[in-house]
Length: 252
Image 1 (cartoon, rainbow, N blue to C red):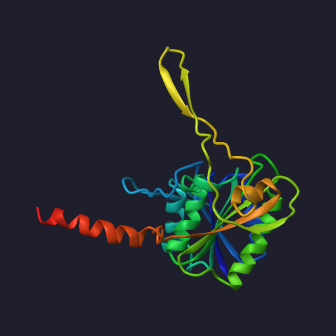
Image 2: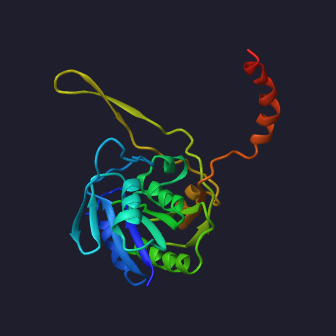
Image 3: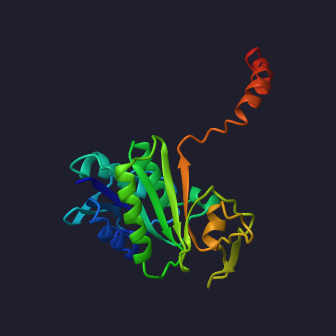
């Protein structure tokens, strides 16, 4: 039976990861290695300046005092009996769309799986306080498919499930969050200023072929992502213009 590593950034006690692990038991041998507490928005952070501890809280369940990236590394390289066939990160409370995937610890968990040569996907649910059964069932179907037909090397998937009635599934591109950033300024009881980064808002009218547009129209969004961040369109232009220009730098 295929081994599946499950992680998240909401913590090992979150409802989303419990439901996910339960449904994936029908697909493979599930091992959960997840942060001991919520560590949302840590992106692809890795812990280098302090030791990591993994507490076994149940059979094939480990709580780690680290990030989702730490959890995948420990799981694959130390805790699991063999290399997993699949890494699944989630189910995240709230969506991970557009530019915000760069902040997401959930997406980073899948990214680390891809870096280790394992088919991986992140899955998030629009209703952060709802029933995670629906996204968990979809994760089960997708996991079965990826175990049979793994992704190409260096690729992974970002999946977002709407809270509304699901109309279908769309393969999408990453959208763009146009503005909407906010930093709230407040005064504490001692009269000192403090700041709180406010909630992000996604634009209306995004095309249906984007992750934002598909989700707003009631579709599950699956966005294929790649580890190689090189801009191949800009590369030849910079190569032609800048290499000659900067040659003078070496000449002194």
